[in-house]
Length: 181
Image 1: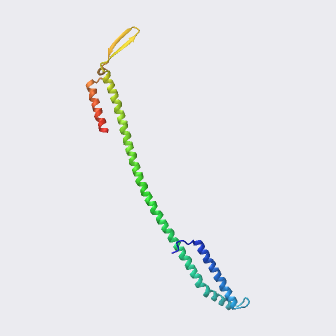
Image 2: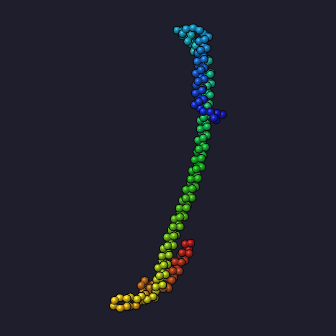
Image 3: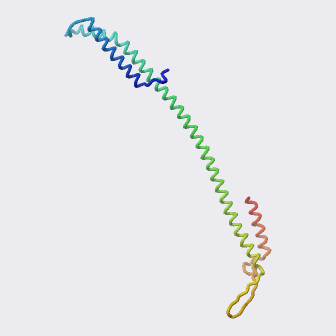
């Protein structure tokens, strides 16, 4: 109804109209009933009745218009508030979804990092076992000032595990690596 009306300007205009109505009513009364100011209560009562009869309906009508304008503005503000609330609710739902996706991504990242640590651990074991297997049975020469000596490395004597057991453990590690992927 009053979509593009600025309420303070309209209320000011209503105030100006009411002011001019009052001035006009007083002026009309004094122009029609000439005379000095009276000391009689009856004449003041007549003056009050005249002003009340003329101004009350007009001022009541202007007050009604001001009330309708104010209600219209409040209604418009309520509609805007509802729209803002709906937008906020939608944004909240989207934020929840995004946070859920982010949590899932972090969880997956944590799983991936755990897997990477396990792979590195198994790779280190493979390297050690491979080195032990490669060195098993090789000879070592020691050159000291007293002469040279030669000895053979026996992994089974050093760590208490045979080459076959090392190969079995190596196979188990490769199976575990395959299951990780």
